[in-house]
Amino acid sequence: MTRLPSLAVILALACSPASGAGEWDIGADVAAELRSFVESPRFPDQLEHFQPSTAINLELRWDSDDRRHQFVIAPFVRLDAEDSRRTHVDLREGYYRYAGDGIDVQIGAAKVFWGVTESRHLVDIINQTDGVEDIDEEDKLGQPMVKVSLLRDWGQVDLFALPVFRERTFPGRDGRLRFDPVIAVDDAVFGNDGDTGADHTDFALRYSHYFGNVDLGLSFFNGTSREPSFTFGADPQTGAPLITPVYADIRQFGIDAQYTADAWLWKFEGIVREGQGDTFAATVAGFEYTRYGVTKNGADLGLLMEHQYDGRDFPAAPVTVQDNDLFYGARLALNDTQDTSILAGAITDLEDGTTSASIEAERRFGQVWTGELEARLFLAVDRDNLVDAFARDSFITLRLTRYF
Image (cartoon, rainbow, N blue to C red; front, side, top):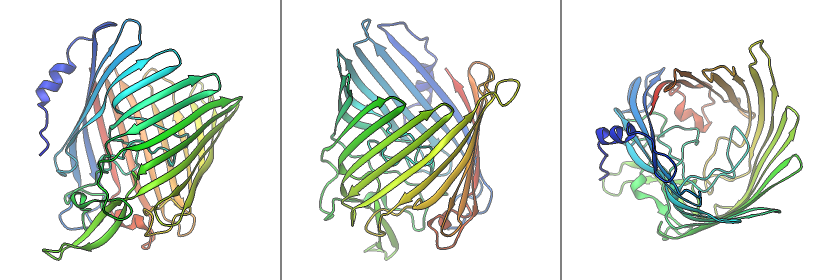
């Protein structure tokens, strides 16, 4: 059973004064969040309309005087009043790092992000998704690793050994944004034959460099898929239906590239994956165009569009709703002293017309407070689309964060 740390202890540490170089620096933020669902739930036992919660991020950082040695400890805590599975603790980061001449070594739990596109992160495979935080797959669990980076004139090579597999988190019976029945996370199956345990080491590498106006990344991963497929069955004792996650052994090749031309950013991510049925490819390609100074106060407006393609076969491969979809949106940055920004967009399935939209707005209040509004709306849903499970789960989230 996971034991939650004392909130008083965390806040006491967070309020301690920061230190200088060669000593520990301590920072933290505490967020009060209210998620409000517009409609009544679709499945039995789900919460009705309001889901209040609190999130705490703590970071302790130490750098040696010569900046060659660094320790980072960054735990995360979510306390949810409605969904017990969403109440969880995770060590997002907890590592030692050595920065030498042309070499960088990192040991411990860390988060690594690969990719350039906005609507989907195909090549980003090192960290597992924290699925109880949101459905956008932006939140990640800390991944234990040994990472060695070689820094050369011809580019950077990152080598990863990942000795511990993290299973994806899913909402519980009380939670919204879930399937019916609840996914049986305790009965997960590992390996292509179902007889491989979770405790084996995965490996990955990535080469990255820039060539003129092109930023290029090439990656390879060999290990347990972070993205599970599912089997449908029944509990042998009760006969109740079950959805069981299956984490197969895979090999994935990835490429991400971004070409910069004045106000235009042309973006591409692509993968080829084997180990989950037939070998398949998936891509995301599109652009972001920024118009600077659209108001007399200097606001910037960015326009985004991306196409998502995925050639996987269901049910051998994990199911996805992003197989032939178009993302379109806009990003407004007011460039004011409060750092006000708004990102709004929608994704439409080009085959059945299913459309979902999202709005994310953020503004700082004073020096230590930030207010955020997020909305995810399922506007038009075809009954045969996987998104139909969430058709009654449109929600608005208000979040107020205090930084220490």
